[in-house]
Length: 139
Image (cartoon, rainbow, N blue to C red; front, top):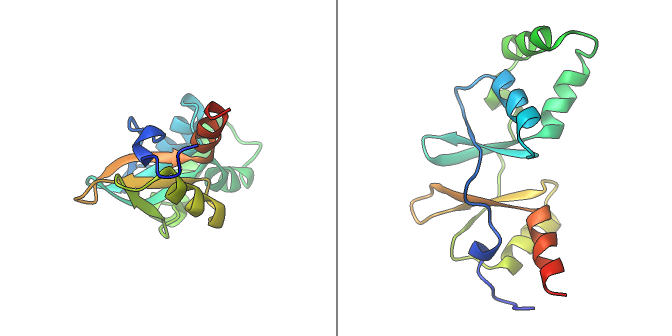
C-alpha cells in the first residue's frame, strides 16, 4: 500500500451537487434518482455544506403516510437547504493524500470529505466507499 498516494486517485470528480437556493424536494429527488448518499451544497463553485440521505430521511420520517407531492411541498415550505445541511464541513485540497482522507473519515461523523482546488472550488468528493474500494484494490 502506498502511504502517500494522492487523493486524486480515489476521489469522484464528477460530483452531483446542489446550490443553496434550491428546494429540498430537489435534494430528495436527486437521492432517489442517483446512487449517492451525500450532496455537496455550493455557493457559486465553493462548498458551504453537505446534505446526506440521513438528513433528508429524518425530515421525511415526520411526514410518513403522505404522498410524494405532499411530502415535497411540506419539505419546501418548512425548510431550506441551509436549514438542513451540515455547514461544519471538512475539506482537503487536491494535494492531500489518501491517508489524509482516511484520518478525516475516521474522526468524523460524516462519511465523506470534500476536495477543493487551490481557489476553494469543489474538485471532488471522497466517501468511505471510495476508501474501501481503494483498500480492496491493494489485496
